[in-house]
Figure 1 (tube, one colour):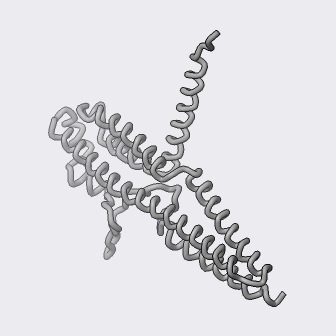
Figure 2 (cartoon, rainbow, N blue to C red; figure 1 turned 45 degrees about the horizontal axis):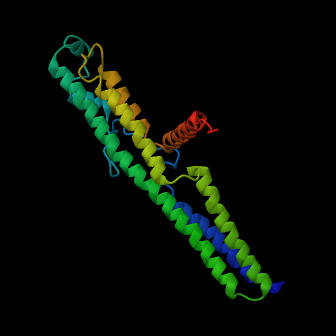
Figure 3 (tube, rainbow, N blue to C red; figure 1 turned 90 degrees about the vertical axis):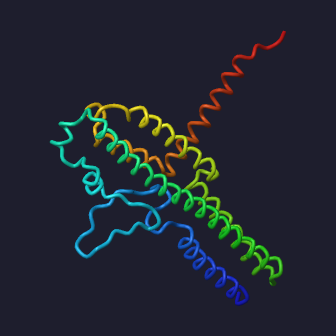
Length: 245
């Protein structure tokens, strides 16, 4: 019994510290994997404070509207048909889209790193325990290490299922890109309209909606829809086949 204490204690220590280390290295600091790229909009900084960009552009809407001369409702409403105001609206929207693209790219890198590092962490721990079990005596201690290897592989499987539905990051990122491309086409179709038909607030809302599509759930939903459509197409093709007599 005493011979088992050291392997069990080592396994517990590795498991606890391993979980903590993997969590700290694989999870984003401010957003979890499901929340997506987060907000690109920040409030104005208070006195003596500065906003932090943290590797991507953050936008202060009030200041941005002021910079483009679109914060005065009375003035804008009197010039809704002027090309210069349409240009300002579109250029402001482009600033939001550019900020979204920058932050979404950061999020996708975090998503890829999270999956890769977690894969490496748990599979590496499983390999380490499995190798140790092969050279450890007595047999009871080896079984404890082998069990730890099985647990590590099981945790990795649960992580992939819980966060990624066992899909690759490439499939998820393709789903995100597909949804954002469709939203961008919709935005582009309205940019020639006057400010009456396409107001500044709606242009801002469309840009923020475009940004909101950069999240894991959107990628999973798109992948699920594509799988469902492919299955339906296969059924339709099979139904269309006429058996030969």
